[in-house]
Length: 471
Ligand code: NAD
Image (cartoon, rainbow, N blue to C red; front, side, top):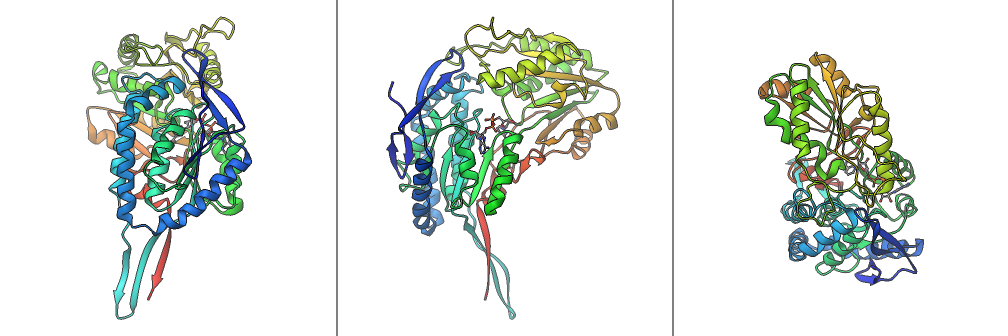
């Protein structure tokens, strides 16, 4: 098995050591990733610094064209990327899986390439002219999680590059391979050094967040790591975009048709087998429709096949890694004694677990705030369901969480749903759906779910500093 290489200064660079990347469906080695050293990181940052100076001088139009060409490269290699993604991440090829993620990466890149940041004239009169320019920051460090290793890399890299920055990207040690290949494809289009990719263990991230020549960190991952990055980035006053964990509440009002909303609720919660930042992670249902919503959800969930991502029929895959599997197992084991198990919940003990990190789809009713599966982010295929009778009380419960990424309200009365939405403490609220992000709408968390936004004009501007010229 040929090891993958680092991508530094437009070249494929072999590392002295490699590490194994496991296929979560088989627990067999999917590929060998290069273990970057501190020197490799230094080389990548140096290459990025040099490349950025020339890249920033290019016209915006030229950078837009380069981004469009990146979209073409990804599209041309979409099946290869999807297969590799399934092998290392575990998600199904079909449904809302790898092919969908690669298609999303193409669409996101194309849309972002159409954005522009012309100077703004703030004043132009007898007293003078005042102009606002958006200037690139310099070198952007991108630190990625393992749940959407391609799409999230695109979300970090494309706006950074479009704005005139260079990037050093660091994938999660669990899913480095597809991102390495993605960056290799980008290098077929971009000048050398504009996008670099280093892979390794969790020691690399802190070296990046403390690095004096990196001007901004864009990080997607857990709240715990986000807090460490926030602290270490303060030393060099780095710009930060932090997209952190969520514990999104969904509130189901009494006027819904349970059968009609079951599919939307299901995919809101279980997209990517629940391993999605803005998935529905706590479901609050009004008592008038509570049992019916539970029944319809169970009926729908029973029909959803889980299997290895390469199986054509699989709609749900394994949990991506053993560490996450154990987190979900622990939370479900705690919830079983407190609530009513509607589906799944039979947690395989480590000794009797069959091959692959498959965790049964789990629905547990009659839980409440204060139970761990409700209060903590599960990030896996287990959903707690909570009964409510009073709207003020349920809004208080939904907001009683340190996270504030997304939320949803389910009702036939959209006006009433919007009223409830306005009272929810989160960065995005969906009505009669959950988690539907799009490239033209800013996305980010409030409270401890993060700092800043991605996507759209507002997301692009986060890759710039403002300079105002008075003449
Ligand atoms: P994680 O925080 O464990 O790891 C993320 C990345 O940080 C990895 O690349 C890791 O190597 C690196 N890292 C680890 N320690 C570091 C340190 N001290 N300094 C710098 N980097 C370090 O997260 P994960 O388990 O990969 O991802 C799951 C989490 O990500 C969940 O909480 C999920 O909600 C969140 N997430 C959020 C979003 C969003 O947009 N808000 C999207 C996807 C995932």
